[in-house]
Image (spheres, helix red, strand yellow):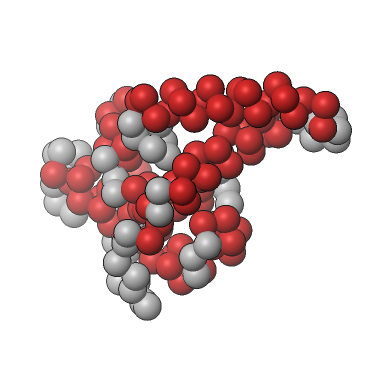
Length: 147
């Protein structure tokens, strides 16, 4: 859901991911954690779907991103996980993908660029714009009205 924000598509991707896990289990070498190996498969399934649907090329590419305003930690601490995930789920697809890969999955912009076939500067700008968009949505929801 973090990547596609469509319950039916997410279910299909989850099923496809489990099929891939079970059919590829013999290739798991056991050198890392099974959880990390499985997570990589599920993320790759979601990214493959986004690539097939050309989601990442429906964005406004900017050369230099505006400086972002630091948000108050207390704003997010006032929100429930469900509220925060709901707002993240409303991000435009390109923003959401880069935001999830960078913030949640821990990929570098170089890795994101390679995985999504975009430039590093596009990855950075999508991330910055995602943060700005999220800040605005959180502000509009009344969590920090003075920002």
